[in-house]
Structure formats: structure tokens, C-alpha cells
Length: 491
Image (cartoon, rainbow, N blue to C red):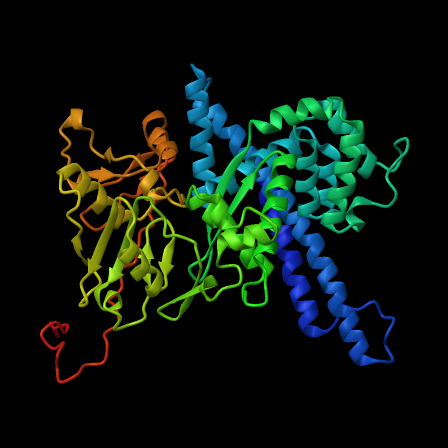
């Protein structure tokens, strides 16, 4: 398929979607089996429409895959042969960054799409053909890519043929597209484990190298913390956590088993006193912990229940607190660096109990601008870094969510070329995008005191950076004009 073919395919898909929409609005989509019952005919037509939309989605995904693979190949040809492994890595980073910015997705998602596109268009012809025909979904295609990862070409072809080639010896029972994705993954993984040319022991040793812990902010002042571990370790941690949580249960314990598990793990990770977190079991463990059946299992702080015994984090924290919220006069959220909005009681608890290297940032009640940075670290370089963290909130590259604490200060106009160390000439890209800037054609644009730098891709496309949106804080009810001196002026 050339570029004209891709445009024609896209136009055909658009026409198909338009025709389907017209048919649904006009009530003409029907199998014709319920003519005596108009309502059933409409319902049956809507189901037919859903089935057709599913097929069109698959065809659209196939076109997206072809376009992504084509762009990757074109970019590689334009860049020419890499002179070193570092240059090759930089070229790949540049391609991923461009696709991520064009699609407005994360670089992880763009990298996954490009890898899946390469696999489907080069190594999995049956899967790609089935996707183009709309007989399997994009989820099925991704599962096939995932389950053939790290297989040699022959093993991957055998797995693909087992599920998608009805003429192969010993084919799978039923067609892959007729299985829900979860069941298809289970069947594909089972077949893969049984026929993998490499022993599971060898594969496990490789998998151990990928062990990691991941952190993902969520809503309402909460976040997810997950770990990718060897199965025996993960099962052991789960069993120990469950035993500790069950040991804490009692007639006066109001927390659920899930809450007790979470509190035990948090305490183990934030302190060295794992025994006090409920590591033991039985009556002795209960007695040693004290709070298992007592009144101290919960602590109320500003109306929010805080689990008993779980300490405040002892780490470097940057928290932006509206001054009135800190005083308890309003209930608007504070901002925790690397996370986002948190409840005022949580912010007040961090201020009261403190974290090592804790920096409090008060904001102006008139316009939400930063008022003051704590003077516990006054040296210029530290103050500038704190201001960069306030200005940017994270790595300024579009779509990147690396926390500002992990990032590296970088001169936009290099020092060797006359650049200053002022805030307007500084960015704080993460290590990955710092390297992208210095090894590829990606370049940052100018910054200001309050605006982080944007980026220009090697193709000349400009992408704005994302940065925190400061908002004026809520004012508490005035009493006898007590806040009038601070009130915003009309001009």
C-alpha cells in the first residue's frame, strides 16, 4: 500500500462510518427478521450497527498500524545509517517522540504502537490480514504481538497459525475473533508455554532483570504503587500482608481487610519497625501491636480518617498550600509535587509532622502565584531548582510525566554559547529527554520566568509544553472587612 492507497483506505473508512450513521438514524440497519415487531427490529438493527462498528474499528486500527510502520521506515531512511549504538538509540527516541506528539499520547504508548506496528507488518502477516479484514479486534492483534514477543520467527508463525489458520495441523477450537480478549490471551499464553522452544527456567532468569516498582497518581488524593516481582516473592508478600491484616482484625477494629493490608504495607515501607505494623500473627502479635483492638486504630485529622500507625513520608517533598487552606479557613486542595491535588488535612499533616527536606510554598491569595519558598535551603542553585519545580511541575516535554524531583536542570542556550543560568534560560527535562535534546534534532524553545520551554521536532513541528495552571485560591467568608487589604483590585 502506497501513500495514495492509504488515503483511499482512510476515505473508504470515513465513508463507511458516514453510511452507517445515516443507516442507524434512518432505522434501515436490520436483519429483516423482526418485521412484525418495529421495536425488536430497531433493537436488532442497533446490534447490527455495533457489530459493523467493531469491524470498522479493526480496519481503522490496521490502517493506523500501516501508517505508523511506514513513518518509522521513512524516518529511518531519512536519518541514514547510525554511526554508533548511541546514535541509533537517539534516532529511535526521536521517532517515538514525534509520533507521541502527533497523536497526543505518552511516549510509552507511542513506543508500544510502533513496536506493534513493526511486528504486525513484518512478522505476523496472518494477524495483520485478519485485522485489515475486521475479523479480529485491535485487542486481539495486540495480544498476538505480546504473546509472540521474544519468540523466534518459526515459533511466532506456529502460534499465529494455530489460532488464525484453519488449515494448519491441530488448529485451535473456534476462531480467535470469537473469543473475548481475556480468554484469547489465556489460550494463547497456555499454548505458548507448552510449545516455547526455550525452557521456562531460562525465561524466568531473563524476566528477573525486568523487576521494578511503578507509581501512578489517581483521583481524590490517592495513588497506585505496584511491583513487578518473581512470582514466589509476590505470593509471599501477599500472604504475609494478608496474615498481618487478619491478625489486626478484631471486634473494635473498623478497618476492612483490604484497608489493613494497605496500612501494613505502607508502614513496612515507611519505617524500619515492621513488627509494629502487624508482621506477626496470633494473640502475641496483637498484644505487641496494641492498636489491633484498641481505640487508636484510626486517627481523625481535619475530618479525614488517617490509619493508625502509618507515619508521614520522610522524603523530599514540595507542596504548594493556599495560605487560607493552611490556616484551616478554606477547604481547597493543596498541590503535592509529582502527584497533584491533595486534601488540606493531608497538607497540614505534612506541615505539622514534616518531611526531611520539606519545602512549604505559600501562594498569593489574590492571583494564585507563588508567594514564598521555604528558606531551609537558601543557596542559589537550590532556590532556582525549587523555582523550576514550581514553574514546570514535571519534565516539560509534551506528554512526559516524570516527576520534577527526578529531572535535570539544563541550559536552553548552552553555557558555552553565552547562555546564562537564569530561570528564563533553564529547563528541567528528565534524563531521557535531556539525552533526546543533545543526541537528536529535537530542540527546546525559549522559556520565561513563568512558562516552561516548548519543543521543536526534527521535522520542524512545534509542540507546546504542559505546565501547572495556577488559579486564585478561594477566599474565606469576610468578617468585618478583615481581608479587604488583600482583596484583588479591579485594575
